[in-house]
Length: 188
Image 1 (cartoon, rainbow, N blue to C red):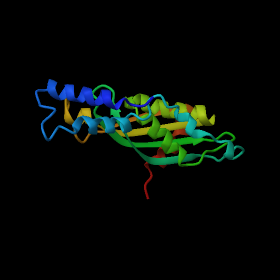
Image 2: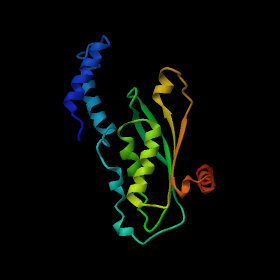
Image 3: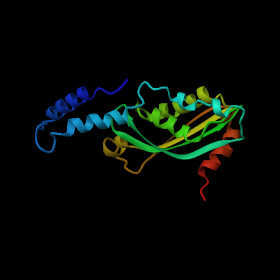
């Protein structure tokens, strides 16, 4: 489902008036259109099946021990305050009988992040999409993000970050998970 730009623009005009500003003043006149265009990008993942990015027919029969992509950058919007949170996702899976092109995993992350979201659900949905799309032996997803709602309002902790973890299959076992966590933290 595409974002209804006209409705978003009308809502932004109303919001600007509700906070006591003039939506027609020179500095704000184009803001409703700009916000509508931005929201079309921010929320492009609404209603999209992220596991569809994992069509692996061309790589069936391939496998490996561990596949790990570190530092997949993303941005999302907190569903509680509609403020951004940004960070990185580290995604690992243990293939069963197929692998996927490495560029497809960041697409999964981007699609799921492009929805009104909370970090905990984002982490779980990435893991679930990999399970649905690849049927791996195990999945581990670690997401680290800084939240606009924590930095700019309320607690005002501008330097804090939040880490969430989702594991499935064999990578839900602490011993199996430990090796991948070490690889995620390893920097050269």
